[in-house]
Image (cartoon, rainbow, N blue to C red):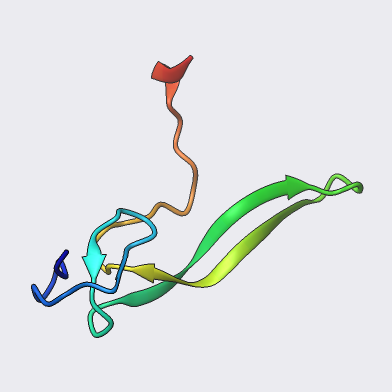
Length: 70
């Protein structure tokens, strides 16, 4: 698979959209791996600090509603 940006061989994929990326074109962005509520009812997140990011897709900060999945 080749890099989305430069067409050279890819070394990974964007965590958010799946585009292939080489080491030179890859960027990093935090990614939430899991959410949970602890025994004190406080929500916590397990985060990967340096997940691969293509720089093109637009991960949303806030969740979106999906009413069609009812």
